[in-house]
Image 1: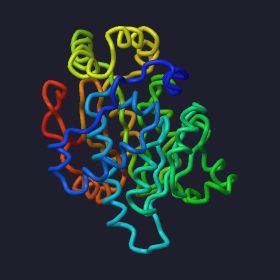
Image 2: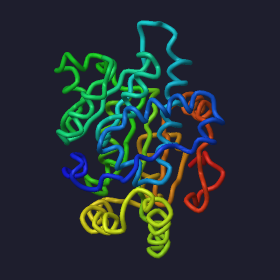
Image 3: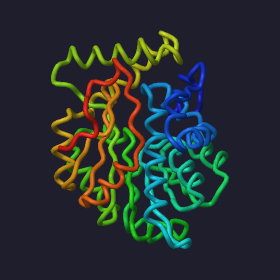
Image 4: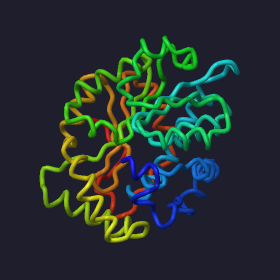
Length: 303
């Protein structure tokens, strides 16, 4: 990941942008997208060029969280708190905080010094913080011992696992239980994960769709093959299937919804508060789900 976050390897030939017709169709989404684009650092340009339609989805989620903050936060001195784990240079947090004019305060984490530098170069407000290190280091005790993290001393309203857990192994129950300690009682946790499939041929076919119909717009055949050899084998080692992930999430959360799918990538929203998760889902713009990338129908789907 070092070479990717520094831009020494795998930079996309062009920076992906969201589908304009989709962005124009939903109030506020184009403005959010344009701000998100300005916040993209080196790693996140690679990330959004690697996952089909991640731009549209992350803008959809970000705008939904901003709408939730607008509905929940009536006191100008109060705010919603957001933590993203496995975030690279942190455009999601920075964009939400800026777009909401401080109604959202955010914490982003990454091990990469290049992502840390990108974060601080691109951040133009005081509502977002960055932890240079693993999200594993973010504990209630760590937060209370750092005065610059005072925004988060009561925990987070929203935690976003952004394709991070697979790099720590396949024990989802343990890691979700560990991270969930940081979530406020009525909070939301969002999971973006690349999942295994029981049919290996189906998994590989979805990978081929991703590579041939999306990634080739941004990377050479050589880049795609190199990443498959150097990185994806490590990522696949820690992947789980959809049944295992749902089971692990439900050990901590009563309400679990699948909200997005793109090839082998899936995104879930979970909470123990039915009203909160329902309100969030109602505030989300509909997903951008072009065929043949999406294999799930009738989203959101409750489990």
